[in-house]
Image 1 (cartoon, helix red, strand yellow):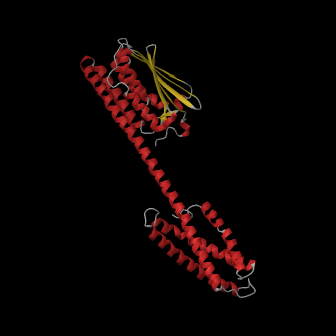
Image 2 (image 1 turned 45 degrees about the vertical axis):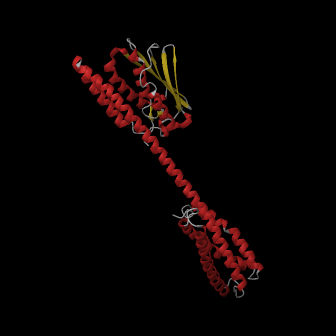
Image 3 (image 1 turned 60 degrees about the vertical axis):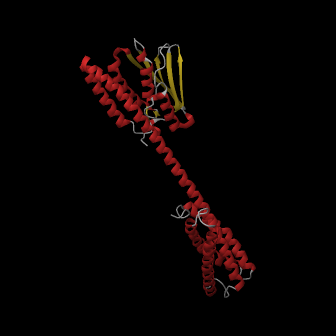
Length: 360
């Protein structure tokens, strides 16, 4: 649709911009002796109102002949020809209106356009049409820019979604591999435990497929997913694995990208609890205010244990997820102090009632 006709506000501004032109045309008619100020105004205003809408047709050749994609000579000749035709039609309309006005009771004498006045109107019509062409090229450039921004935004969203799906594709097979190995080892020594682990694994996968489709989800829902993950691992680790949650008031309703906590908890299991004969306690905590939410995972580690293969992969995935959603507004920190490893995520506070849990 025509960009000016698409919005009433734009159309109103466009028509108001013709008022100074009407004043100048009125003055030109008076100075060339066509009539009085009143007669010239009665003639100029409706004449320019018609031409204002006629000049809107410049949008279509402007779109058909985009700058930079068409030869300059072709573009110039085409617009000059369109301007000449439009101006000629406008002069013919002016001649007819002058005859009609001269026979009406609005003026006391016959009004005719002289050759000088017809030439003046033709030149003015050419200039006004070419000015309209310039304005429409500006609209076309703005439309192209908005289209490019929309394409870039769609590409960015698609890239983020692809990264998320890649993370899930990387995370779930790794988790399934460990779980199936555990089930296989329990099948002979502890058949009941193997069955329980199968049930827990099914609940976890069902929840993951159902609840982790959005770009953001409440922390409470993310914790439900982590609890199911821990329930599966609990069968393998038994009493060696203990989990404590320290979630501050109101934090469960704050939103964060899905699958952020599981890699941190899995890191705590693989590089912390698994290396300790007596096991240990994983602490999942969160606190928030009106501006930011801090979520952390703590676990004991064996300081003398050499680094295991794959160390840092989970943190790298989490960092990419944060950058994809929040850019520079989110950070991931981690440190080892006194035998306790702590991974901490800092993100802007997004409440569930602000649309943070909507699927996108």
